[in-house]
Length: 139
Image (cartoon, rainbow, N blue to C red; front, side, top):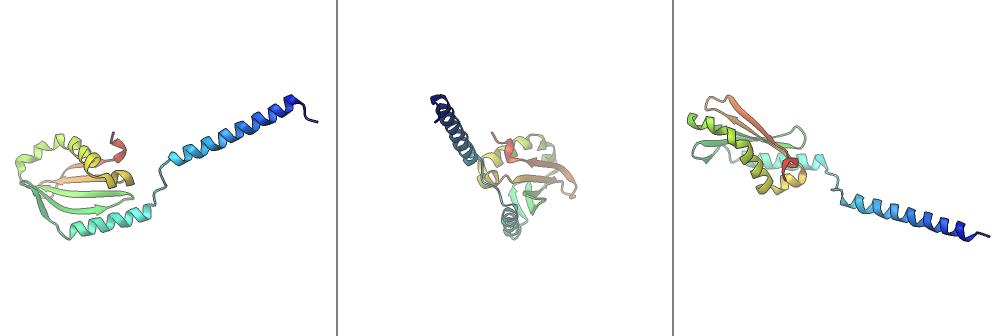
């Protein structure tokens, strides 16, 4: 026959295992669902294709959006041309503005973990800045 101490030990062990099991399940449920990169890549390719069908387009007085490309992996890059030479020097504040844009105005990219890149070129087509915004940088 089991003694009272043995019975208490078995009950305590059972209770501890149940707590560990349910705690593990709870924390596992908090993790974001696995992201299907193939599905995301296809969605990004469709988005870039649809956007590219409308380009080039002047997005402001001195900036033209020329094209969008996808990859590598879960990334989308926009290519802009700064058509006014005088505005080229104003790119130093741009990283913060683009980070804010991705964090506040692009929820679908944040949720999918898409890295959004921006390549800025001068009127001759030379790259003057490359900026990459990772949604993990959003606070």
